[in-house]
Length: 334
Image 1 (cartoon, rainbow, N blue to C red):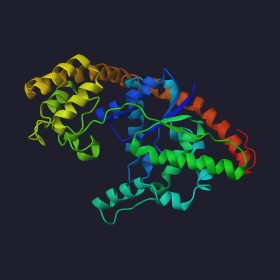
Image 2: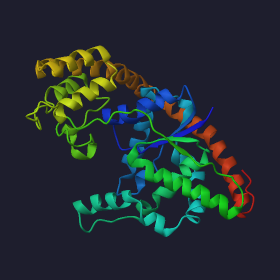
Image 3: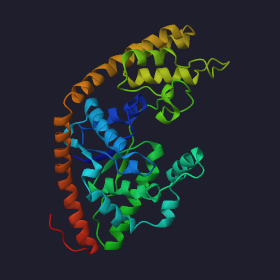
């Protein structure tokens, strides 16, 4: 079986855009590949943060991933495997400054931070984190990385670093990880359906996977549906987004019936919204129930993931031991 690596930053609750766009796919991939999934808390340190909140969000993300169906043996916390940072330093020495300056996310994120406060602190970590991301991928000899098109640049950097490392040290050590593009829906904000669902837009713009049923229904009920309607009868962004949610929930019969109504010109929002809410709640309620069970057993769950991180760390130690030998560093005793 081929190796798959993916990771997520602990930035609070998962919303349905995260779930349908990535995490649901993570769960399915576990049946086809050797999967390794990380909660990358080091990456969350690149912007101003509170230490207690980072720790809280890291465990919350672990609990939520487990609730969605990620297997504990496949899950690690990045900071419990310090080999990531050492490999990142080694790889940074075979990464060109020019490559880093071309990474668009640094520009986007630094502008986002500076936009709120022109005197805001922009860390060097924000500039260098793509190398740490490459270390995350190359550490586990990943064959594939499930990514969206907007993340392809980071994966390309990982391949470039692997190629340069291999060339500089005269051996094909690191594989060149390939993108694993899968059919994942792009869920938009229900309040502003021309924008991708995001927590940074505010609470009304995203639907929490673990939110109470009443709130989920309210958010669907208040979803914008008529903004952007066109005279020629094409679907508005808001209506299209609700249909995307139905498709993501795999409610084929409901989707086909309501789509036929739309094509016939008989679709009523009073029918569409309750149908979407019913289907979405049906998907989310079991996940939320599992989450509550996990929260009731926090201590044992933390011990489980600490143990799984240690088992995964053994693989990281093997890689780093070999890398240190290749690049001419003294042998470590673990």
